[in-house]
Amino acid sequence: MKTFRLVSLFLLLKEEKDVYSYRVPLQEGLIINREERNKSWLIEAVLPQSEEETFRPKMEAERQMVLEVVITDTHNDPALMTGRVRSIVPLESRISVIFDAVMASGKDDVSNMILEGLIEEGYSGHDMLSEFYQRKQDQGKWSKQAAARIYEQLGSTESRSKK
Image (cartoon, rainbow, N blue to C red; front, side):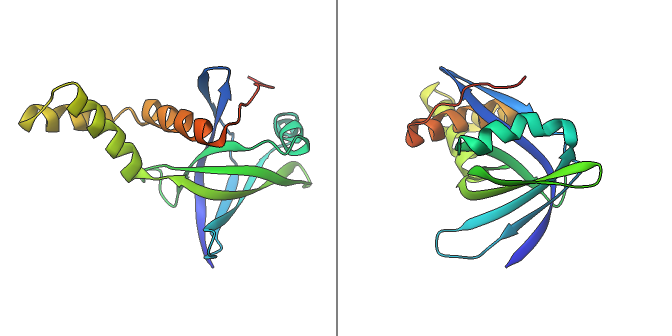
């Protein structure tokens, strides 16, 4: 197993036809690659107690969600995972939310989506390269598009319960 520091966590939640992003107010976090055949990960997010109202309904409904995670350094590219809340553990003044997750999409998938779009729009050569770098800067937009594709594959919808 390999353990990494979790530096940011977003929930990319589907509501009807739109995907919206919820920045989880992470105070501390770890992400563990279990190195199993199914490529499963365990995520622990230490959060303010007030976040229990966000995560408890998702846990009770066993709701599958798309998670955008950044590990080790804030400058790293985010990865998209699908996961469910396994448990919520009360701590002295915070809560620990444990997720079971699997990798759904990485930086190569987002880059491929951007390149496919550029080709469809007729870009080539230096113009394509310049536009690629510019679009790559808007990571949130591309993560939402990738999340929408993932939800289509899951055949699942997420009702917004908070925010």
